[in-house]
Length: 249
Image (tube, rainbow, N blue to C red; front, side, top):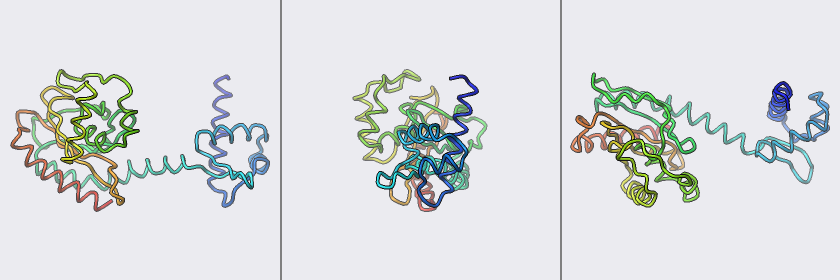
C-alpha cells in the first residue's frame, strides 16, 4: 500500500472511531458508511480490523458496533500520566527540598520505566539522569513495579535476556525474582548503582483508590551522599509522601 493510501486509511479509521464516540447507540455497518460517506466495503474492513485490536466491539445479536475496551485503556493511561503527575508534583517538590535529593515519579511502559514527573535536587552535586526512559530492572522504581506485577506480566517482562547497564545490574532472572519477592514484602526497593555508577536510589509504590500499584516514587542521589544511614531517612519520607499522593488521587 502506498504511503498516501496508508495515510488515508488511518484518517478513515480515526473518523470511524470519532463517529462511534459521538454515537449514543450502536451503529450498523451500512449506517456508518452512509453517514461518513465511505464505501461500506471499506467500513467493514476497518471495523473488522479495529474489532480484532479491541478498539471496536460488535453486538452479535443486533450486529451493531460501538467503541471497545481498548479505548478505555488509552483513556486510563492518559488520565494516569497527566492527572497523577500534576497531583504528585507539589508533594515531590516538598520531598526534594526535605531530602535534598532528586525525586522521580515513574510508570511501567513495556519493559521500561517512563519518568512522567521529575524534581531535581537543590544541591549542586546531584545525580544528573537525563533519560526519561530506563530499563525497568535497572531502577528502584522499575523493581518496585515489577515486584507488584502479576505473574503473567512479570513473565512477559522477563522473556528476553536482561541487559546490564553497569557491572552491578542483576541479569540473572532467578536472582532478580528473589529480589523482587523481597521488595514485594518489604514494600520498597533500592538500586545500588545498578543503573548508573555513582548513583543510588530508593523507591516505594503509589496506589490508586482500589489499592492497585500504578506508579513508583523514588529519591536518588550520589552514592557518597545517599548513604545507608540516609536511605533509612529517605525511606520514611518516601512512604509518607507516597501515602499522601495515593490519598489525593
